[in-house]
Structures are given as C-alpha cells and as structure tokens.
Image 1: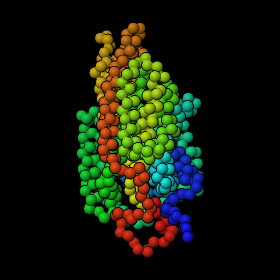
Image 2 (image 1 turned 180 degrees about the horizontal axis):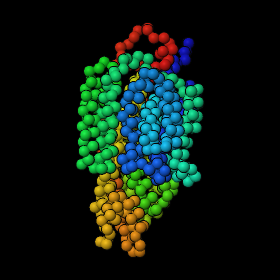
Image 3 (image 1 turned 90 degrees about the horizontal axis):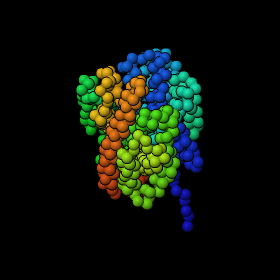
Image 4 (image 1 turned 30 degrees about the vertical axis):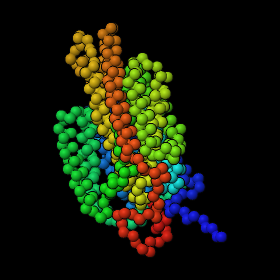
Length: 537
C-alpha cells in the first residue's frame, strides 16, 4: 500500500518561521498602539514649545485617527491586490519616515501634516499584519492562538503608551516619543523583508477607483462627526455637516458595491453569520472597553493623584493577562465552541466592569487588581476568537479586505464608545458636582469642564475651600464612573447574549483553504502558473 504526503496548503509557512512572522507582525501592531496612546502624555511639553491654537491642538490629536479610519477599507483591498507583505513593508517604511518628521516638527502645521502621514502608513499596516498572521497559520487551533496573541499584544500596546511616554518624557523632549519608532520600524523592515512570506489574490479583478474616494469621504465624515460630537456636543454645526456628507458618501458607496462585479467591499461577507456576528461582538467590546480604559486612567491620575507613568503601570496587568488568555481561548474554542467562548469573554468584561461601580476615591489598588485581570482575560477571549472567526470565515484571497473591515469596526466601536459613554461620564460628573458658593464664574466653569479641571481649580484655592472643591470633584467623578460602568456592563451583557445567538452553530474548526474559489471572480482553468497559485493568500 502506497501512502503519499498530504499536499501543503498554498501560502502555508513551514516550521518555526510562522512564529517569526507572528513576532514581526506583533511588533509592528504594538508600535501602532503605543503611538496612538502616547501623544496625550506629550501634549503639555509639545504645547509649550510649538504654541498651537486650540483648533490646531485638536487636529494634532485627532488627524491620525481620522485618516487611518478613512483609509482602512481601501488599504485592505489594496493589500489583496499588490501583496500584503509589500503593503506592510511600504507602510512600515512610511511610518518610520513620518515618525521622524513628527519628532522634529517645527510648528503646528508641520506636526498636523506628519500626523496625517502616520495615519496613512498606519492604515496600510493594520490589516496587513492580521492578514499575514492568518495566512501563516493554517492549522485552525494554532491560528486561533496566534491571532489571540496578536490581539492581546495590540490591547497591551495601548496600555504601554503611558509607560513608554512617561519614561521618555522624564529624560528627553516631546519628540522622543515618536523618534523611538524609527529604529524599531527599521528593524521590522529589515527582518520582515527576509522572513515574511508574500501573499495576494492572484485574480483580484479591476479596482473601482470611484469607490475609493466614496469610502474615504464616507468614513472620514462619520468618524469626524462622532469625535466632534464627543468633544463639542451635537449642537456643533460641524457635527451635522460632516455626518450628512459621510452618510451620503457611504450610502452611495454601498449602493455602488451591490452593482459591481468586483466591489471594493464585498457585502456578501455580511451574509455569513460567523462574519457578521463576530464583527458585531468586536465592535461592542471596543465600544465599552475604550470607555473603561479612559475612566480608569482618569481615576488613577486625578482621583488618586498618580503620575501618567504610575497610572500606565497600574493598568498593565489587564492587557498582560493576554499571555494567559490567548492560549486558553484556543482551548476553550475546541471544548465549548466559538459562541460560548466569545459570550464568556463578554460576560467576564461585563462582570468586571460592573465591579468598578463599587470603587470609592479611597479604594486600594490591590482591590482593583483582580478586576483588571478578569477584564483583560475577557477582552482576550473576545478579540482572539472574533478576529479569528472574521478572518477564517472568508476566502483567503479576500482576507485583507476582511481584516480591514474588522479594524474599521473596532475604530468605529472605540470612537462611538468615547462619544456616547464618555459623554455620559462627563455629563453625570457635571450634574453631580457640588461647588461652594464663593467661587467665581470662571472658577466654576473650569471646575465643571472635567474632573482634572475640578482638581486643578481646587489646588489653586487656599484652605478649606480648595480642599472642598478637590473632594467634590473626585467624589462627583467617582459617582459618574459608577453609573457609566454599570451602563457599559449592561451593553456587554446584551452583547454576550447576542454573540451566543449569532455565533451558535459556527464550528470550532473554521477554515477556508487557499484553493477555494474566490466567490467574486470566475475560475480560470489552467491559466495560472504554479508560482501564481502559490502566492494565493
């Protein structure tokens, strides 16, 4: 009896090389996460040296997210066409160059432009890293673990931002928080050129260039409207103008996709219950966890009076629990299924978030530590499985587009979370703040602006009055945090039930092989070379 070796899946990465691919992609993704969160800690020093206006300061903070969110859909489709490795390396080189420009910006205008370039580069890196990890790991169990590690590193990188920023700003100028990206991105570029495998869709079809600006303008308009509403309220005319422009562009874009033979965004992805259920769960998780991160950061820095570095270190145990959660999520998927694992993750997030409703201005950190760890495990269980489900439920030829949709959902979820739950947090604080009558109108306005403003105003006042204002601000914020965290916990609990229903029946082993026919492109009999087929995803 003659036996033959199984034919390897096209695009598979043999041996330990696939773990090297994971490491490279994790480093690139981590740098993006750190860069996204570190800027807030450089703002005081940056403002002292560059003297931006209030409007320029807002653009310095927000332009990165605007550009990144607007370009993700196009970047994911582009990676499927020109090669995900090629796009990643181009993005890494661009990110390093833009980081150097940002570090040495000599004025607000230059800084805004360089931050926009960082957003362009980031949009090419994010979907490419997920796509390359998904294609390097063809074994479903290994793939779930690898994507779990990648998701965990991405979550941890946001918490690392304050730590890295605090360490650098204690010794160097504000530009150092960006300049550190240059050697690290150069390392990723050099190693990635050798280690990373190339993958692409060999028959991508013609790119519809009309869809590209429609998707970019639509996403930019919606994200700008959400962020502006969170900061200025819905009465700002810019909110409605950008929302209308964004909605019209996106509506036109989606209608066009239905008519195209090869759309930029394949709407048939959403007919797949595994894809749409996982995407919705991902978005819900980001909607709530973004607000939790904001609230805890303010709690440690303003209520407890810790430095940004100390607050960053205090938040680290949650993301670091991904080291345990990522392998465990793979085991859970094969024992209890995807639906129950995602539901369990959201349930853990809900319970731990609700537990934060019991904190007081004097709660000891060691009482908060287990809450942060449980929340981190829940985040890892959720994102590891949902990200894996999204990428494994589509043809490997279209994995770049699917990764971009996943990242776009996360961007929108985070932005909506800050806009809605962040606004709830601020409104409740203002309504609950009780200030002494002897404060001037300017002092009352500053104290009501935010808990940081309240504590700062109290610190400028002498004696019992100043202490009264500080105590009132901390108490009002803690009370507003209680209600906001309970609201977030309720949203996650609904999300857990939704995930249990939507992902019910999705198999634990979910895999699409590279040789599967692309549903959008007719089969081409015998036309492709072996090399071309080997490059398929």
